[in-house]
Amino acid sequence: MYPVIADSAKSQAFWGQAEKDFEAANAGIDLVIEQQPWDNRDEKLATAIASGKGPDLVVLGPDQLPQYQASGGLASLKKAYEGQEDKFLKSAVEAATVDGDVYAVPIYHTITTTVYNKKAFDAAGVTELPTTWDQVKAAAPKLAAQGVSIMDYSGDAKMTLNLSFYPLLWQAGGSVFAEDGRSVAFNSPEGKETLQFLVDLQKVGGLPADAATKGNKVEGGGLSTGKTAMGYALVKPEADIMIKALGEDAVVVGEPLKNKEQVAFGLPGLLTRTSISKDEASAATVAKFFSSAEFAPTLSKASGYFSARQDVKPDSADKVGAKFAEALAFAKAGEINSKARQVMASLQPHIQSALQGAKTVDAALADAEAEANAVLKG
Image (cartoon, rainbow, N blue to C red; front, side, top):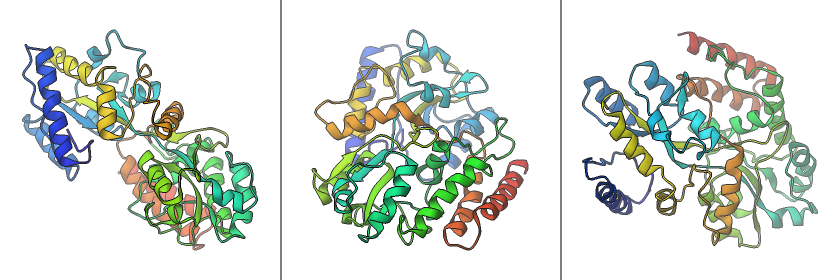
């Protein structure tokens, strides 16, 4: 288990109790939950699997599954779904599936959505909060005239494109990879529309001046100081920061933006069975327990994440959390490919170049395509 619960002391206490609760309900299974840091997790896990001395079950992200499956590091976990095949978000189950087999169950889910500073829109005379790309483009000059960029964008090279470029690409109807996964598909009309959307916004003051290189800092950044009016890929803790800084009456949590599609980045935490595990029945019992409708709310409360189950409702007293939970219906779990991270690293600097005016949109995506396809063939 990794720091799904950020506070170390709380994490130790939570998983220690979870281990005891599981064993009390399943006397025939001795469960050990070992907590590990996020740092260097791939290197450590790959070494453990290769040596055959490591975890039977481990939490992975969707982009990690294909590489471990391709190297023979995973084992089927289909049994964990018996009797609850339709209880999980479809997108989460798809993220746990590689080449037709299911290797994991989702035990939590992250989700992003659009969060607005309503006061900034009111001050600019924009009475209807923009929910589509066209509405964002139309309102941008009005906010720029007030010294406010309408939309946040974080182009820092360390920033994952899952929280910057990719959600917009998906909303345009585009994809990073071709269907067979052997080449990239972002140098397309949809990809060009996405990057042009960002470039055009920047030209009219619709993005922060340093959008090409800025990090994803909400606290102390434009979203909490009133210099930026909306974020389109924010998580709940970031909305909470805005509320604390701007006031509850100023902040509105909305649905994901729409263009051709309405999509948001949301990542399931996948409890995955490794090839070290030789007992599928016990592995399935553990996975069922930690993905159950009974356990999910306790993990959600402790972690601040959401349940990946369709039969678990969010805490009705948490109005902000409830709005984020509604966005789970639009969740996409990133781009699933064994070289997704390398391709992201290839694309990132070319997006920066376009935003900085060093390359045209066409040249930036063409150069990125050539570089990324070389990565996929390598």
